[in-house]
Length: 93
Image (cartoon, rainbow, N blue to C red; front, side, top):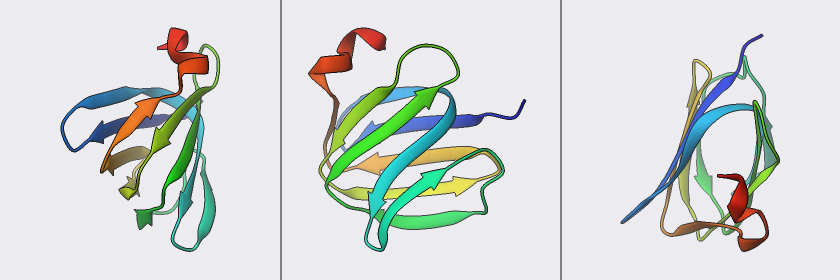
């Protein structure tokens, strides 16, 4: 089964990386969901939550202050101005 390779970094620190089944984020054009096989995208990331369903384990929620993200060949790279894993799911790293 195909999976997404996800990497999230903030301007000054690493946030999370790993395999995922699905990712949701808010862009300038509204919410977007990314599944394996998604067409290439380059978008502006708006302030809000990024939800990740990892290949194994519980859902991960990241709070981000904006930035951008790209999708290409099942690889998702998110560069945020600032981002933190939500405290309620911090144990699932």
